[in-house]
Image (tube, rainbow, N blue to C red; front, side):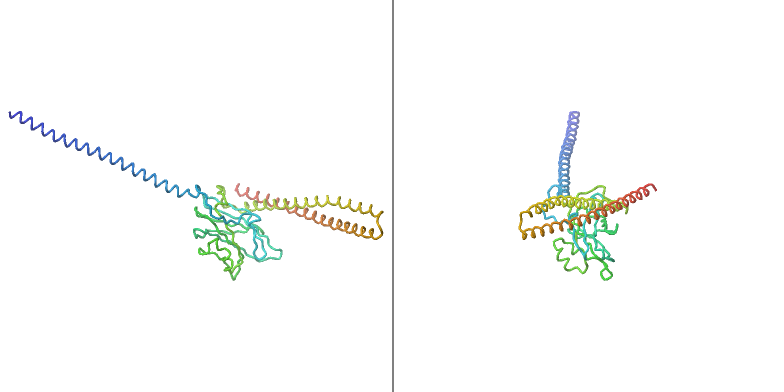
Length: 325
């Protein structure tokens, strides 16, 4: 009996241990399930967070900005005047990867305009942030504005270009006035002779090759632009001459017809015909003089083109020499 009681007691003890072991296994199993659900929850939350930030980051690309585009553009549309000097943007570049941008200006000054000192500064209108800049003269007519560390989320860059003097050595621009909607008001309040250009992020694509260049690079760039201008002007003048010369044949035919009709005209009518013939002949003589002057202009433009080609070639050589050193 004692042995049986001993055995049954031992059996009961084992059952308790088995019970604890079973409870422990169930607890571990539940903990693992909870942990798996928790990990899954945090993973989903993390994905949601990344998705939201990604959406916000790329929203400017995904959804088009339908706000009004205020942009000065390039070429004729950008032309403006200051103290008799015409300023035009001929090229601009921007690299989103390194935050560098540049604007190449052409200044067309009157022949007697001397001693003018120009300067330029820039800032981001929406972020109210000034941009680090360098304004350099490339030639008598060309200046380049170099911009560094442009904010990655820029929307509108405001560029002020003006004439500086001892009385007013700095241009007017501060974080409070970087508002493209108040450009006219800003001009009225300005004590300096200056103009404002605006560059909108939707009007310029990022160029991965854009970077600060050597002086020779800008000389090569502006000489090619000037050569293009000259070639267009020469072509326009040549077309004008060709068109005028074709009209000469028609005018001569008219003179011939008037001469033939004089045979059947009264003396009074002949006087009128002679006067008309003389007027046409005078017009032909004056027009031929203009053609001669136009041909001289074309010859002068050709010489300028050749000089620009020479300067372009010299800049290329200097650039290559620097590379080889």
